Length: 350
Ligand SMILES: Cc1cc2nc3c(=O)[nH]c(=O)nc-3n(C[C@H](O)[C@H](O)[C@H](O)COP(=O)(O)OP(=O)(O)OC[C@H]3O[C@@H](n4cnc5c(N)ncnc54)[C@H](O)[C@@H]3O)c2cc1C
Image (cartoon, rainbow, N blue to C red; front, side, top):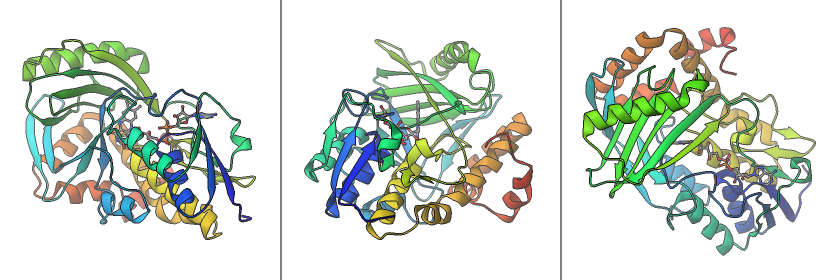
């Protein structure tokens, strides 16, 4: 790719902002177009998790090494509570953080979105709001999910006096082929269901999830804000089309197994910036760093879907009754010989 001093980015989500920050720090003039009126408007002051199991390197170190500061509110979680399809409970404990909880949206000043926005402004990135641009007119496309959804979510956020907690439920009546998550920190709660199939049942699934969490934890949903969202996963053949680089969920860089797309978004941003700065092939960079994980989660998803409750009970057992759940998660997200054997038969998740 020819070296440019001006870079245009479509989309001010985590991937677009991270690419903008890294490039601006490297001396480029960066212009970001965002179709909405603020960053983070796609989200709802909800808690999300930045996964820390797919690599040996801690995700925070990886992000910092890319030139992004950890300026958002973040809380490490070494475990939580997991329920199997029969609502059997197990406590997961890992010697190191399994994920870092963070906030999304445009409401909390230390949300991931607003923190990245501040870093971008400090790095002299120019951000134009309320402007949707044609991806072909950009150098980097960071427009988020597109095409047919792989997963959809419905959720609520609300204030609570409940103690801090991270909990997930694997049950098809509440979350077909997916999971329910209930996250509480500092008096704020997020409860959501993520469906990987039977999308038309989402409202009913949400109702059942609310009832179950109320029964299990006796929470009250006072002044709950309801919201929804979706994600899309694919394994691209190229992410450099006519010299335009595709990053984050726009490129299909999601997690096919559970939908943890933030790490992929930030890492792909770093790789796109690196390819511009060092004049290297972006396709080579993302294939080397991200492709094995994309393939592994596609296989894990296909198996998870195929064997239904057996997979859920197996996952429950192998994370909950295991002294190193982080190692098991690491295995699921990396392209092992077992994944390699199954991969040629995997088409559904791609
Ligand atoms: C309910 C929900 C819960 C989730 N929970 C987790 C979680 O716990 N952990 C995790 O890792 N991931 C989670 N994810 C996924 C994660 O949020 C995404 O993978 C991540 O936000 C992708 O970042 P991105 O920058 O690629 O895209 P986005 O965050 O979607 O940002 C894209 C931006 O581009 C803008 N845009 C789109 N088209 C244009 C255009 N043509 N011109 C200008 N602007 C445009 C959009 O308005 C948006 O602001 C969740 C997703 C959902 C929906």
